[in-house]
Amino acid sequence: MGRSPCCNENGLKKGPWTPEEDQKLVDYIQKHGHGRWRTLPKLAGLKRCGKSCRLRWANYLKPDIKRGKFSEEEQQIIINLHAVLGNKWSVIASHLPGRTDNEIKNFWNTHLKKKLLQMGIDPVTHRRRTHHDLINVLSNLPQRLAAANLANLSTYPNWDNAFRRQYSDATQFAKIQLLHNILIQLRMSTAPTSYRETINHFGSSSIPDHHQYLNEFQQMNSKLEALENASNIGFPPQITAQMQPNLPNYEIHDQQPQSSSVNVQPVNGLEIYMSNNSDCDDHLQLAEEYYSIPPSNDMHRYPNSLVSASPECCSIISQIENKLNSNDISNCLPSSSTSTTFEPLGDIMEDEASDSYWKDLIDKYVASL
DNA sequence: AAAGTACGCAACCGCCCCCTT
DNA sequence: GAAGGGGGCGGTTGCGTACTT
Image 1 (tube, helix red, strand yellow):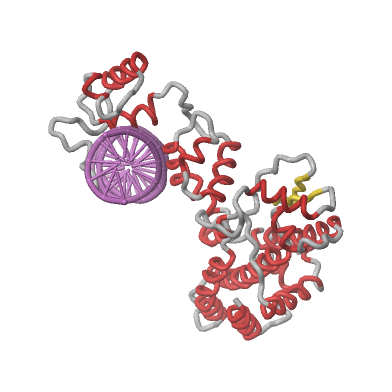
Image 2 (cartoon, helix red, strand yellow):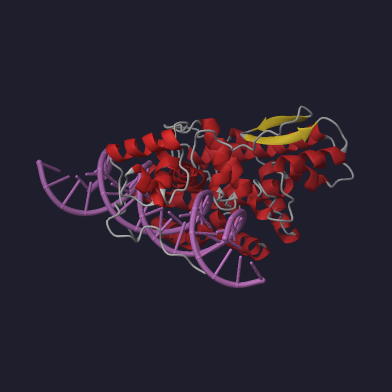
């Protein structure tokens, strides 16, 4: 069928609107309403196409439009709705009084997208970018290992100590990132971060003791936090700036379901939805209401989707876990200001002195993905 | 101080859906 | 049911401004 553009007539103005044009449009609409947009410009004395008038009115001149910065609450609403709806800007705008779809779309593209990326969250799927991070780390690891090995050779006497240490730290950091990413996978494969996933995780027939479950989850988070904190202390700034964005951040929260029977329990920045009553059908119904769209339609858009680990992967994760359990990471703080950055993690990293251990581990882990 | 670059946002473009004829 | 028009929507562009070199 097709249609001719509404702005193909000669003499029609394009580009930024002048205050005089704005005034004409406002005056006309306040007096007569907009009626048919195509006929409006002529009646209002504007040399614009109807579409341009509609957009100018809808996005800028309408009296109830809210200008200015988006509040934290508004930002959270946009993120949550985008996780469920995708780029349905007009629907998202309908939940934010005074905000236009265009404004929200621009704000998403210029601010929120970057914010989520910095948090290690994919802005399209709203999943944590565990696998991508891991692949990035793995793709750089051989170079880092090679560089570190070179730095250790006495055949390069001109390399100063800071330079050697930087490369040595980079190697250690790569290893820690690997450990970190594997642990995140472990956390995501065993710890649901939303109410739906709680149900999915335990099945609809029985839900074990929530407190015990939360305790386990908290312990895992504590370990990860300690690991992150330890790896950040004293790290050379030129490397930190480059690599820090790869470290996921857990500040994002799901929106609290509108029900008094559901508690939100913050766990190290994550919020887990747990119900007080033990009726699984009610739980599921609440979850369905909260997410509003059946999961089979578009599962990938749900926030905090469950990432499951394969049995092989779990086995490797267990090895790492055993290692972590045999070392008290919470005490891993630098013993002095002159210590090497990753000395505190030495107990974990150095008892397997050879890089072949890590190579094997990486190979197995990649194969299990 | 000037040139180059990045960023933010208003406006435009083209496609699509829905309603009317 | 098909054709055509009106309006809405999401993606993209381009300009003005801020920031960096």
